[in-house]
Length: 119
Image 1: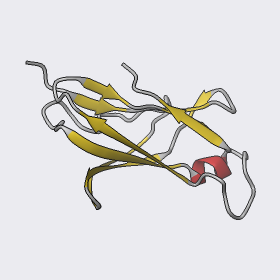
Image 2 (image 1 turned 45 degrees about the vertical axis):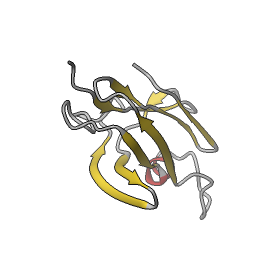
Image 3 (image 1 turned 60 degrees about the vertical axis):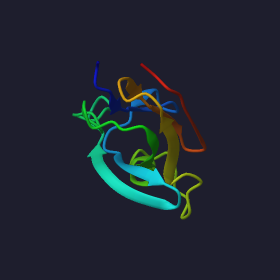
Image 4 (image 1 turned 90 degrees about the vertical axis):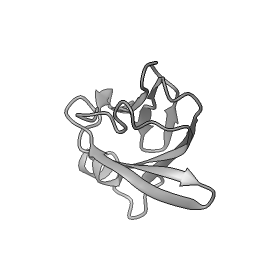
C-alpha cells in the first residue's frame, strides 16, 4: 500500500508568477485544538522544497494550512494599505485516505484566493 503525503504551491494570479518567500504553517486540527506539525517557505517556483507531510506521516483527519501572505503582497507592491484585506489565508481540509498524495495549492491575489485538491 502506498504512503500518502502532502504538498502545496502558491501562484500569484494577479502577476502571473509563482509566489516566492511565503511562510506556510501546517496544523493538525482536532476539535478546537490546533497542533503545529510543519513549517516551510516557498521557493522560486512557489513550492516548498520538501513535502509538508512526507510519505508515511499522513494520517486521516483534519488539517489546516495557514499561508502568511502579508509580507509577500507588500514586498511585491500590490498593496499599500495599513490593514490588508488578506494577510493570512487559512485553508482547512480533511484527509480520508492516508495512501494518497494530497496537493493543496493556493491561487493568490491581493483581494481573493482559491484552492482545490490537485494532483
